[in-house]
Length: 161
Image (tube, rainbow, N blue to C red; front, side, top):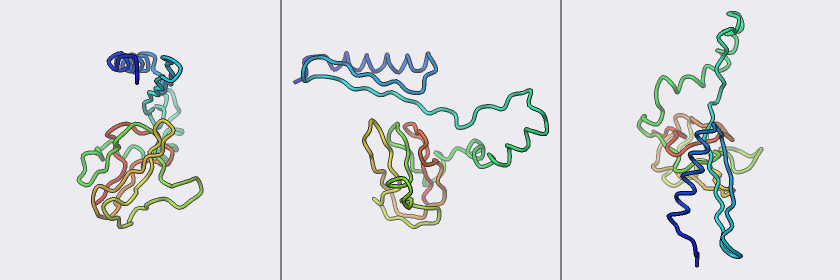
């Protein structure tokens, strides 16, 4: 049905990704019209750092105060959760949601036992909600991603042992 080249679309998407990187953008969305019933909708996004760096000129008394509040965030930097046994990684780029809808109970919590195929969370990609199933049975030992956080392909989501 399409009258345009697939290779041209791939080149276009690669160019958008390059624009994203070169201009330090977090997201870029484009709709390309080829004709009456032929178009290409593309959304390219990347995760941003969870916490901006603390300025070097910050007073010594102010630096220790934020550290205890954000202590859980730097912990994954010392060990890569994606390399841990039982790590469940993201199969796509998108936004992770730990519950089916705002205000409802999360799909899983730390300590829950899951069976293979149980829904762990949802990743929204291009306005489509994608259920992420448990790759194997086990117990949820750690939830690495926060609700509503952007995730990249291969990013660790949870640890199931």
